[in-house]
Length: 560
Image (cartoon, rainbow, N blue to C red; front, side):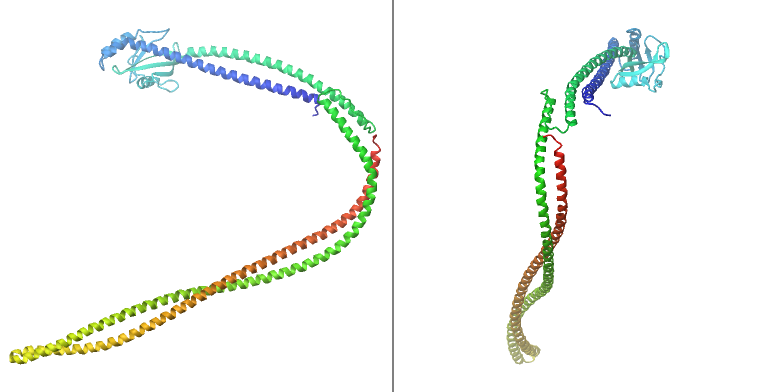
């Protein structure tokens, strides 16, 4: 659907006003309804609280009446309770207010001055809604809540249930629940009247808001129409002037008349400035068209010379591409040789590392062997000292054996002097001398063995000492071999690094050569494209020359 500017301005003025009116009316209706609901709720709560207070006051009056009897009686004093009942039964308030009493088992004790149901248990009597309000009478009286909401048949019409509010208290001495109840249907009637009044006030206020909103909407529509006419009228004048310019013969000397100082006047001024700029541009284009014809001729000659230069450059580019390709192949061969050298150095390094591990193992074994030889030499030195100690002990034993032999000889001489009495002693002396002789003989044999052992031990100690010196020398040489292998490993690592640098440099050179090769090929392709573009430019120059003639014809159509 196509809308005029006037229609759009009217929509811009009326639609927001209409939306504002609708929103204002909706918000006002919602606020009024919320206020009315809150007012009804507060009114009902006030009425219920008033009835609760009134009912409590009535029951407190009844309690005050029988309080002296209750305070003076003992637990279970039924006579005092009967006296209290005589006071409570005739008590009434309002139109039909009375008091009632039940024991904790739901048995009715009294109900005003009516004998109906007295002595009957209502404990299991259930209301139409399924509740047992007689049981609740006892429960709220004992737990101190006192109040109970329930429904009871309406007097004279048992089918109608009337909402009631009950208040009960528990007299423990007489095991009696005393209470009273009032009808709550008067609250519903009052709430109906209040609801009607609130609804009437709400309708009155909403009607006023609607009337005011409608008046504002009409005023806004009138203002929108007046404003739209004020904007559209100068636009129509501007359109008429533009049609005059467009319908003419391209007269760029014609200008719009500025009749106002508002945005429309600024629009006319801007249009005049635009036409001034177009006028100047067309004048310049006319001059440039003349210059363009001469430039196109010169460009055509230059294009021919460029085609010849492009052909020579194409041939030279092919030669450069061939040379670079050969250099790239040589660089790849260098990189391959460096890679093989790096692999050989790496293998040499691995073998050197293996040899170093073997030498390290040999160093460890040699060190252990030298330590073992040193320990053996120490043990042989200790053995030599023990042998010398044994020789000293043998000397002592030999001396003791010689002295024992002399003593046995002296004993035998003395036994011979004693004659027959010393014969047994002489036998013992002979045995002792024989034992001493064998001891000397054994000592001499041991002395020979110890001498040979001492000689062998001394030779072993000397051999151990020479072995230790030889082992330390071998260990030192092995350490020197390990140091040499470390130096070789370091040098091999340096060779590997240098090979890696050579390979990297060769690969980089190959990459650069390939990049140059690609660039040269691209240059060749660019030269080829440039040659084609040059040919195309030649054709374009001819087309531009034709377009220049057409442009001159078009410019001549304008009046400048």
